[in-house]
Amino acid sequence: MNQEQKKLRLGFVTTYSGRWPRELPEQRDEEYGRWLSENLPQVKVVRAGCIGCNRETLETIVEEFKKASVDVLVMVYGAFTGDDAAAYLTEMLKVPIILWAPYELPFEKNERLYANALCSMTMNAAALHRLGAKYHAVYGSREDERAAAKIKSLIMAYHTVKAMRHTNLGLLGYRPTAFYNCAFDEGLIRRTFGIKMEETDLKVIFDTMEALPREEWEADMRSMEEAYNMDTLPEGHLENHSRLYLALKEVMKNQGYDFATIKCWPEMGSLHTTPCAVLGRLADEGVCIGCEGDVDAELAQIAQHYLTGLPTFITDMINIDEDKNVMTFWHCGNAAPSLANPRYDLVIRNHPLAGQGTAFWGALKPGQVTISRFCNIDGEYKLFLMRGEAVDVDRYTRGIMANVKVERPVREIVERIIEEGIPHHYSLVWADVAEQLREICSLLNITVIEL
Image (tube, rainbow, N blue to C red; front, side):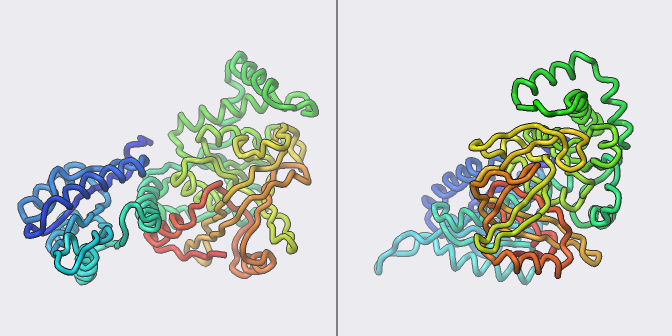
């Protein structure tokens, strides 16, 4: 998919009523327009060619924004603005608008107000509410972290929603045997998220592996032998690893898949090609493929990746420590190497359970994480959401793991997961994107189960 098609087009305009001084609106137009471009590189900021203060300039701005096909507007109050500007912009463009009122400049008893932005924003919001327009209101200057964070969260939520609607998800096989929770409703996913799906049989992957030039997979084998300890890996497993790594990149490109899920067992294991370590390597290259055919967990990975650009870790939760209030998230070995804790060894070994492929064994790095999963519960989507802090602990079993300290009592979390019917896979990203995920769910009318 063309990356430009996914990028949010953000219209930016500064407004004021003509009887107010022009100096402050001009200053805010420059400063806030520059701030948006510098702080939101993921989106395309389309700046109005003039400041909106009367019907003539608003008509010009609307034509500029129509030509640029803007998806969302940010309207900064340079000074007091009547209801006409926000109403006209939303009626003509039919896109959501974010009303942003910076703080008032200091004023004294015998001096006039120079902006009166807060009053203007509340007035405009009430007018838009009457008109049924989609709007958000943010109060605070760009230097205020609360206001800045709110603006970023809203815009990145809109960006992610647009990107998901332009996403092609590849299904590399269906789901593993007896994993009923990895089943999915394609129609519901398309209605809710706009994601398109197509399927490619595992045989296509195996055939692509077989057809690769020998020199390519041998070169990859040599580079892996130089980078990782794999002295206990069974004969032939590294060759299959390198063949699969190259084949998956080729299939993803040829099929035009932005993301994928893969049925990683039992067929792949039967051919000694269980792909855990391959999926980890690909994640560090921005090729995100969710394991065990779990499409709903992959939906969370997609959202997290669009929000951060970082690799994520699809995982089970296998243990809790009530004394330390820590949850252990573990999987067979599919985490990106960049997520590894440098204090401990990261090695490539056989699959830790089935013994039929390649997997990373190691501990993941400390830091703030967001844990999430979209869940089809009773025919509608909900988001499971949790914040935590990955702690510095070495692995204590085969495979890859992160130990995460959370705020809510861990036993209570487990009981609530079971009560709500939340399946067993989660996607972890090493960033705090909880607020952005909540905003996405607000835009998509998805209930959030936050623990």
